[in-house]
Image (cartoon, rainbow over all chains, first blue to last red; front, side, top):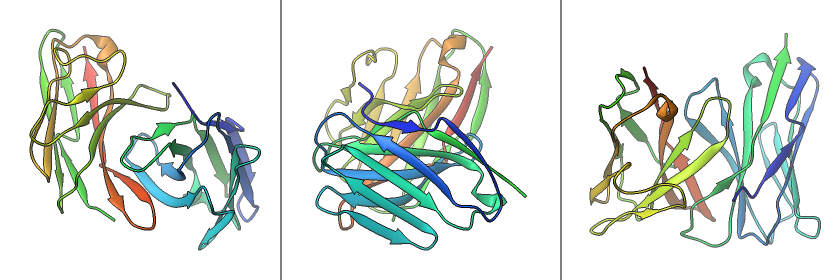
Length: 111
Length: 115
């Protein structure tokens, strides 16, 4: 069954603005990971946040995790046209288990 | 991280035929997975490819339709058998690496179109 649900489903912003995408899940998790997919290509791993972590940064990316609300957010600051892609969150219940993906958010950054 | 390659990158096939997709990883990994992504959809796990034993299939996927091989810790194949247009999808393999957590990395995908 699908674990994660991203919102919004689609987001359109101007270059330079910040983009925030949210992910909610239903049951307890071990890790939550965010991925980017450009136009039907393979997935690029962005960041992993463990269930005992609340926030992680990587370059222009900031991920938060609120296990009490079973939700995570991905913030992309100072967006660029090249950030245009679909973004997915994925969760696992423990190590060595496959990921369950949400439906994704389609981000369009307009130059 | 892991460098993963898939062959072919895309193919157009006739209904009723079969296609075998190869996945090669640049290092030994314990866990390898195969996913399907139908047009405009998210990823759905097909199976876990187990080295030295039969793959573990998710609900809705069967070995006769999606036979999987895993002869060693760096290679796996997925066959899509007796294809129909409904099998038109992107097929992705992924591997799990332990790096501060169980991170999964994905290959570039194989875009399959069945006519």
